[in-house]
Length: 298
Ligand code: 13P
Ligand code: SF4
Image (cartoon, rainbow, N blue to C red; front, side, top):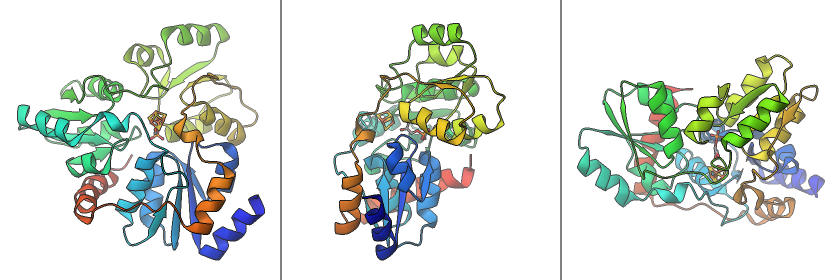
């Protein structure tokens, strides 16, 4: 299967991009593995005839928006992100009516329609930097309320309005103070994703996006890390740093990230499906917001 996939990639002049939460066998066949910001930047630059995104739907949509002339496919059509579904265009419009002077910052874990209403998007790698770059004091921020809390804590001079108030990722809110206590008993460093609950963030030694974890581990000492994010991230860290000790939480699994199998990837390359198709006007408006984010950097 792996040989066939490699041959198909060459035959179709395809590039395969995988998120850090994808199964390791998919990551091993990918040309790019990274966090959602890294995938977006690489998708924008891609010159391949076919871009295959192994991740969840919003990642494939972001790739299409940034590189609209290319064919972008996702191997499994219903690989979604339940967090993205919290934020509807109507919720953004309503928040904007209530806070007319506010800027709208939309997390990339969102639909293309919501991004089209944003002034700028952000990822967990650059949320603070993006918000700090805006002149507005009040910021409408969605859909992740825990990432909103993180930004608020880092930028107390801003007023962050989470929209909706309780938007969250079930994988990350699964980490509790009991997990922090267990990690402290094991010893070492507690590293959490900013989608974790604020009380967990307060107790962590390091808060980072998945890409930030890869970079942070490179410069860290040899203390063990307890990693509070999706389990596959820990598998990736172990591959990258085989001499280090990383602890995972076995239940921290994103079901949608696990929908793509090698057979699905092979089929996606063979049949060039499932193609991401979005209305041009939505893509044009969303692209402005995503490119503004990319210009801010990490
Ligand atoms: P990253 O941007 O850190 O890769 O996070 C994406 C995501 O879906 C986290 O759950
Ligand atoms: Fe969405 Fe959470 Fe899965 Fe990330 S881990 S894709 S935020 S459901």
